[in-house]
Length: 143
Image (tube, rainbow, N blue to C red; front, side):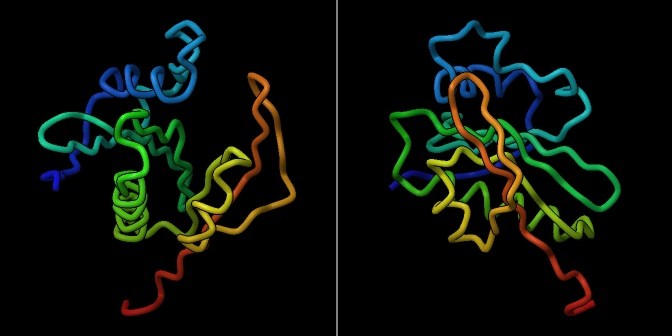
């Protein structure tokens, strides 16, 4: 079993994982975001190897995560679930009221396990269908 830890990382450390997991056939520039420098970036390390990344951006009390990716050799081992739980908790700790993403339609069931709900807002990019999914956070509990 892998020793796992999560830490905040620089934006440029996300690019290799994003590229390999999301768009390996496109140029590296395709995985860089114009506002990467403004985000918080988290990396999950398994046995000291970076295997999963996610970038978090916020406007007021709403947080969007983007470019959530796990390298193919590490998929199906629960690393994405651990990382998603971590950022949900982080947003809750920051007082966020909502966390959302543009989910690949193929990943809807994954996000639903965490309580995310589909909206009717859809899009397509690079031939991939997306739907906005969101999770409302009730920060009044326990406060």
